[in-house]
Length: 100
Image (cartoon, rainbow, N blue to C red; front, side, top):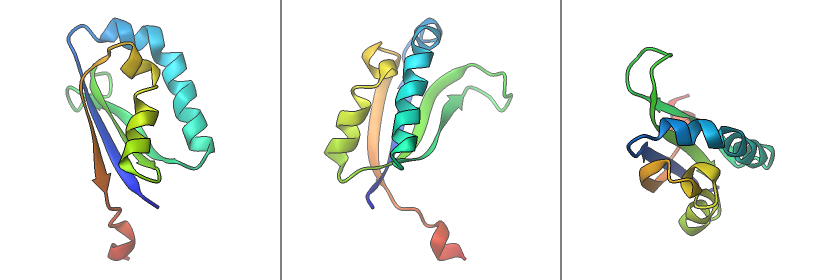
């Protein structure tokens, strides 16, 4: 198992793009989850308020290597629509099992 944290921050005026491409983005995430490769996903908010606008996204994914993780995400609807100003795919170690 090779885990990666994908962190993306929105560009300016991303809200309309997010709304327009939400269904395709969710569909892509559901396929990844069904394949057992999505461990966590969610928007990054501008404040603690759950109704706060999004400012980015964070995912924990399982791929063979970093290039596969990057290739997968570069085919996601949000990426293709230009929602994000920046995107990082960072190797991640799940330390939770070590805390038991």
